[in-house]
Image (cartoon, rainbow, N blue to C red):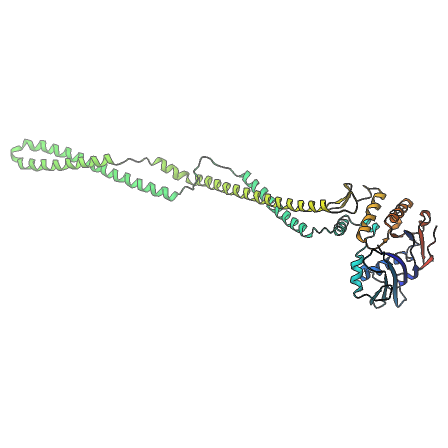
Length: 437
């Protein structure tokens, strides 16, 4: 791991001039507000990351340019040589960088090289103060976990399932309000067909009535002819010819009677009451049939939507299982570390000062910062004012164990109490350089 062995800052932000050669494991940067403490830590970030740090006004007011020079000394096992970095920023906003090795050879594409070597260092104090969801994103990025596509797919499926579940609920409510009739046929009663059937049977009944009238007329003719025969017999002698003709006529009527009787015997008498009742009840019956069909269709839609919801639930579960598998196989920088969509967890407790001790918060954040930039042995803590003496001692112990150097920004001076190097910034300059206590 590489170390920052020297730093010179000129006219950067509130700093007029500062030269340091960090030693030990902890440097406390103290001083009053607006004295230039943050400027010193920001100069280290700008040295390594350039414009990515996004300093609104990098050049000190009244100066023509700012200049930051630093030496990064590599270990023998590092994949790069020691670096000498010089950044110059003009008042007009022009940035330039020069990176050389110990022999003075200049590197091409220095910004790309520095970004690949040192990435985006994490401030432990910033990690503690982050919004919980932002903290989760930092942890996922650090571990190489990108759930963007899975989360987008899951959100889309979840929204679709929410809509379908709403349709399922609405359809179920409509089905519950509908009445099902068991006393009606399955198909709609066609009144036109029943009316046609009624007319046909009415015509057949009318035809029978006409036959009955003819039969009645025939009986009348028979009686009349018989009477006439009786009268004619008294005048047999005179009316013999008439009798013969009358008998012949009687035979014809008798034949007609037999034929009509046979015809009537073959004709059915229809009861019109049942079909008339069906016609009268057809609309009510059809209303019930339509209601049954609507219920049947609604039941089919309800089951279909339930199936769609089940399919979406399975897809969401597969995404969740995929994410779970990735998390189970992930190499967290601290044992006991995990996360949900809402926050980072440590030993299943939210990463929050109400749930975890300050020692636990520091240990986790410190490990996160080391993991975020394993190449560089420099760590910046910009919000050190919330740290007490015990916290600073813990930082010193962790820094020593990790063999890194930590710059801690505080208001005032509490570094003497823990044996740390102290830089007091006053009016843009270092008042006392590295007073070792």
